[in-house]
Length: 336
Ligand code: SF4
Image (cartoon, rainbow, N blue to C red; front, side):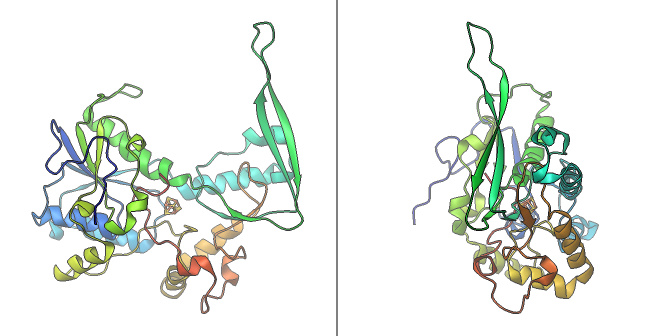
């Protein structure tokens, strides 16, 4: 199989010429953990920094996995933890203020008063009538700048609408904090332009079965060269799991926030059975977002059935997401 690497320059086989830094984006899932361990076993070049962005709402199993990786008896290089804040708290703040202002029914000029959040991909269930406000720039007149006016667009539908919000959380809570840390390590001041040529080789844990997730070269600043060592080694997710077994490591949890709507039914069921209080927390979170977050006009749900999470019967198949679900982990690259 021929594989094209989505990198800033033409694919390279050796180290990046002129490299000053080699980093790993640690997503705490199977693949990036395998990369971290491979480097420790001398199977790949070591990393100068292993950087992980914390949403503060990963599952307990993922935080346990992080503690295991950082325990002194593992003898692994340290993981640099960074964060853009608490994704759960920010989402609940947005839901709370939006709801307090009247949500979709509120006067649209109140829109900016509700807390903003780079939202997870919540499932939506909409009303028959959808109202949307758009801000448009009026035509400039006689050389004078135009004013911004707000238009309310109303659309009538025969049936309820079902959809999903565009995922924004990964970029803001996982990718940008890692990029900011790389800038900090390079000594770049906030807002300062970095070098226009790649000097940082940043590795990610993508595998050959995830080629569709390869970010485009424009997804990172010019000074970062994105690298996928597992793809270069022709390794799939299954190969990573075999590598883990051969090395005698215990199974690694699937990295995700506990309320991530992109988890399939097997993961929800596992949480419900093995960590019931965490599942209860997810159910309460699901209830808290029901009336929307800033800018939404529909009800929001964590489960693709668009019914309350605590009412989902996980003992039977529940449609597309129960089959495909979170096919891939967040791993710091989803959504780009
Ligand atoms: S795991 Fe899900 S909710 Fe968390 S950052 Fe990734 S996509 Fe967003």
